[in-house]
Amino acid sequence: MTEDETRSLLAEHAASLFARGFSVGSAGNISTRLDDGGYLITPTNSSLGRLDPARISRLDAAFVHIGGDKPSKEVFMHRAVYTARADAGAVVHLHSTMATAVACLPEVNPDNPIPPLTPYFVMRVGRRMPIVPYYRPGDPAMEPAIHAAARDARAVLLANHGPVVSGRTLTDAVYAAEELEEAAKLFLLLRGAAPRLLTETQVEDLLRTYG
Ligand code: 13P
Image 1 (spheres, rainbow, N blue to C red):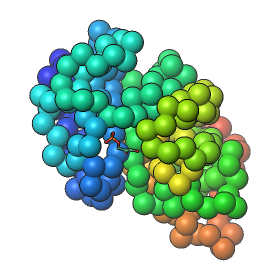
Image 2: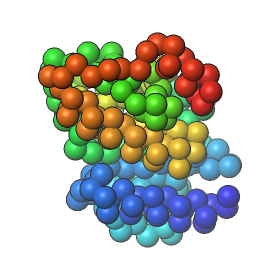
Image 3: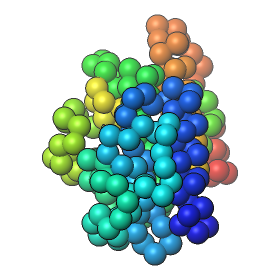
């Protein structure tokens, strides 16, 4: 895919997420790695609903801003994931309602708050999604915490803030963020019930087949 095609795809996914309420206002940011080792990332204070593909920020392989509008103030959040995960080709950060609600619950398991309820959650997000303690948005102190948590998790939840989700490709990361939001919704719907969970054998089978 050319850089221009990637810019268009990023704007398309962002607009779709915005249109369905996965982000509001100027919340959220999305990045993807390019063939030359550099990155595209959404500009700071931009609405995911109205990105101009040509103005999406361009970073070099060292995450230095080299083109487009001023990048998201959370470049370091994305860098934390790319440097932790060689398989990450894109990172999606949202303030999506259900995942953020789970990130506000003090009683959930901080190592893995959402159990394996559905196969697509396991296939897209994996078996573990830890919660990273609260940091102010834009606080670079969150980088080492996200880096450590992302080493063995494709997605992490920032406490009282929202999800950070990686994928091999931009589309994979967007799909994973969508599955995470649905799983969070199911988890909240089923709170207080005793739902049947996927068994360890079923989780293993999914990861072996699709992981
Ligand atoms: P930016 O507008 O700088 O990307 O920040 C948005 C955001 O989601 C903060 O968490």
